[in-house]
Length: 344
Image (cartoon, rainbow, N blue to C red; front, side, top):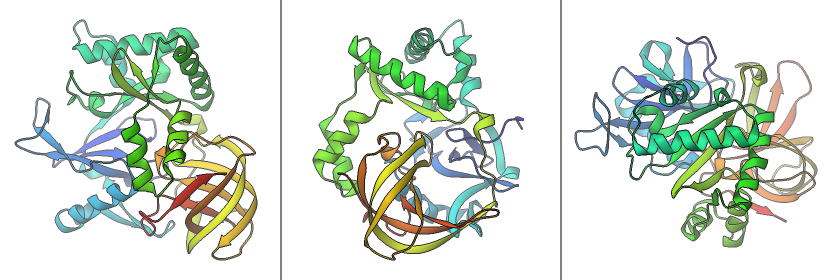
């Protein structure tokens, strides 16, 4: 095992050759929270030296992640875990079942050092070197995730999924990407189909979906290939400890609120500080301090002092030390497909 902690966007392969994507930074002592993404398939589209794979998740959302639980529950129940602190059931891989742990920063370093690379790997290296040069961020702060990390990408049609480690580095890279878009070195990603899909899936007006995509700095096109950038915490920024707080579900709630803090909004889950909260529907409780999104589409898109309206799951947070408070969650299993979000 690597000495660094398990992090969001790492991948692991199990003894069954299942490939899971790790979620977040809080994990039980003997397990790691992750969702099932690929399983072996004789007619799979993606292959490495061992086997071919097919996707078990087609759309990156909490709803689709939950759909993989049934497959695991029926066939591999050892991967289903009830967390007594968060009071949720999620897929979690026991350490004893991990065959390989894929680290984005290590794989990117390996690819950069290759004498011979496929066309997509070449494009990946050019993109990283461009971003590193323009931002002054060392290449070691970057990583590659997704199919390239696993070595099962299609050089002709796969996307490039980057990782950037650190809050300061992520904010700097955001500014650089926006500047490169102005220079047209990088093209901003826009696709009406994306907006229509998000509008239908998340129950948000089409114009809100368009505005969200307009604000998504971490999606772009480089040399004709779509790429994404995913901020991930550095070791020193991981302050969460598994079991140090308990979550009590309180049912659905609709609120209006002002954004007061965005310092944790780029990561997964995206955490926004909120204030001036008005309850529209649901329990009238206080203080409601946070909006938490497990749906990446809402990450890093809001600014301080913006007003929002959200229908989601109310939870009471009970820290081991400190005063209890409430938060509203987007991306819960209970309200999947019924949540709403609007920028006022």
